[in-house]
Length: 211
Ligand SMILES: [Zn+2]
Image 1 (tube, rainbow, N blue to C red):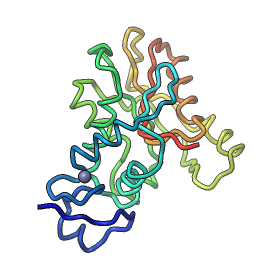
Image 2: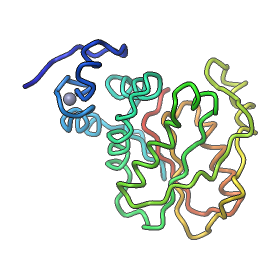
Image 3: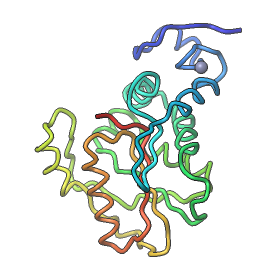
């Protein structure tokens, strides 16, 4: 049985009745069906930087999924979002790879009720058998939304610190994980921190880039 619903970012009564209908095509069963997931992966970004893995540009269904996940707290999307990352991250990364989620501002965690990047990291870690370590911590609640580019770049420079609980392993591969790449300032800052602490192999994984 197939239900077709129009895509919109609003949560509709239909979604409340059938919480596990595909956000893309309405198919009952999973929050994102195999077909819609494969369509996103198939059309994945042609933009390639070395050591950086991106599912796709932030538009269409992928953009809606990210919004549903972050702003409507549809937590069940963590798994399919992680599966899409799994599809674009090379399979031959070392088994001792460590996923490092970019820390979410605590006021965002509070308002959403969960740490969205960490939840994707946990799912990806489970799929790959990689460890997830919260190596990065936020210094203060610097919130980027709405800030102009210049302000964001200055804010972000001292946004993170290393969690002393973790020791950086030189021979480990670190995968810095974030949802969206906009200016790249957050991830670049995080990468530099890890490098300064001695990390030698750092990869970057993001769901989407917007430009
Ligand atoms: Zn679908």
